[in-house]
Length: 205
Image (cartoon, rainbow, N blue to C red; front, side):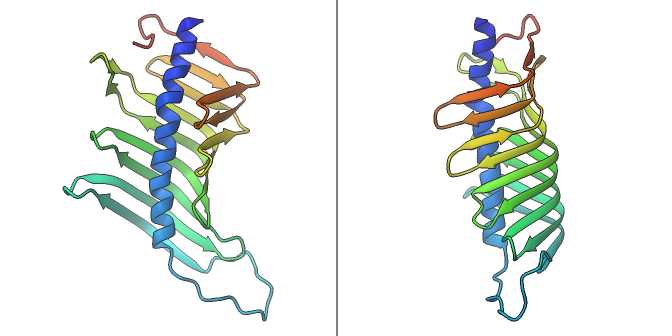
C-alpha cells in the first residue's frame, strides 16, 4: 500500500503538471496566432462553418539562447466563429523544460476555446515525459498518461476524463474508468474499475 501511495504521489507531482504546462504553451500559441476576425454582420444567423484554415502547419518557439522550447504541429486547424473554438487534427506537441527534458503530447484531435482556458484532447490522447534524474541521483522512469479523452482546465489547473485512462510509470501500470485531477490541491481521483500492477524493483525512489 505504501508503494502504491508513493507511486501516485510521483504521478501527481510530475505528470499532470507537465501536461498542463505543455498544453498551456500550445494554447498560448494558438490564441496568439489566430488571425483577427472582422465583426460579424447581423444579416444572417451564425452557422457552424469554419472561417479560416491552417493546413500542415508547424510552429517552433525558442528561448533567449536559441534552444528549442516547444514545437506544435498538426494536419489541419479550423476556427469556428459561432462557438469561437479552434479544432486541430493530428496534433503533436513537443515541449522542453529549462533542463532540456522532453514532454510530448499527441491526439487525433484537439479543441480549444477562444481564450485558451480549456483544451480537449480527443482520440488516442497521450502525454509522455521522458525518464529524468531524481533528487537522489537515480533515474526516474518515463511517465505516460493516456486515454481516449482528456479535458484540461488551465485557469483552475484541473484535468478530467469521463472515459477510461491509463497511467504508466516505467513498468508499473494503473487503469481507471474515469479520472479527476486537481493540481492546486494535489488530489487525483481514480474512479470506477481501478486496477494497478506494480512490478518488483520499480518502486519509486
